[in-house]
Image (cartoon, rainbow over all chains, first blue to last red; front, side, top):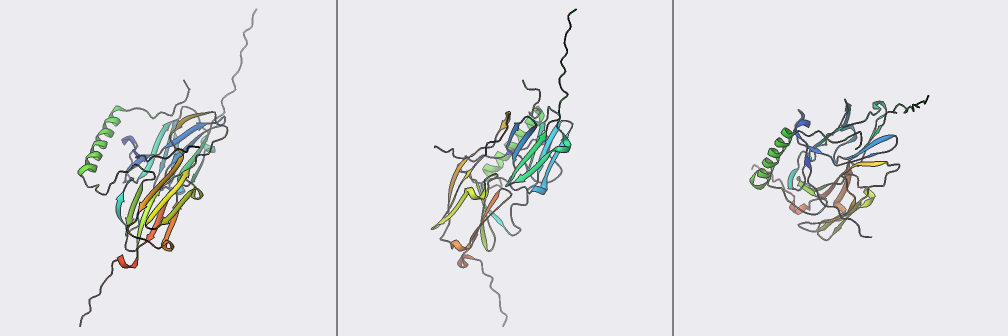
Length: 133
Length: 149
């Protein structure tokens, strides 16, 4: 089986609208978003972000994910070679669908955020019969 | 046409601003202060740093399980090998976005000299791999105290 080889990718800088007052650069995490019958699931790569530094915000149909990285270098360390940039992560999405904010689940493992946004149950469609007279 | 959308809204002003930033960054990269920057075509990208006692080699490997990584020290070569697996999800009705990639990687870093494998340590935390290589005693900076007589 021919295995796919990973290619390095440069991180994409987050757009200005997402800029915050905190210093440091912001990048867009790569995401997978898929849907099941019950929920919308978001997986986001945020290497260097510990689980207690992730913020998830759902407001007025907008989902904002952000993560603050732990400083990448020790206090006495000096950089010799830099091939990748380090910085915090932020990304925003418009949710076109209502999600149940009280049941949102988030877990962070090995730098990957997994977010489960349960859909709000829609009102059951009512069938209206047209009577013939 | 789905009745929900994940598209970030498009703002031409924001786009312009981003373009300007990218230009600035390009400029900086060619002649500016970001001198350590190196462009390579092999995954994973590495940042290398040092302090008095150690050299640190770091790589961002979000979602790679430690058991799928293989780090070897062979003569004066440090070899990073592994595979990023993205397990198939259950009950998927449809994908909105697929940006994360799975695949294998192999990268060789040539070190200036042969190091003692017993003094190499690798730690994986929050998706960042840090390999700590202890400097040989001979190259460590030595402080010389001046004696007054």
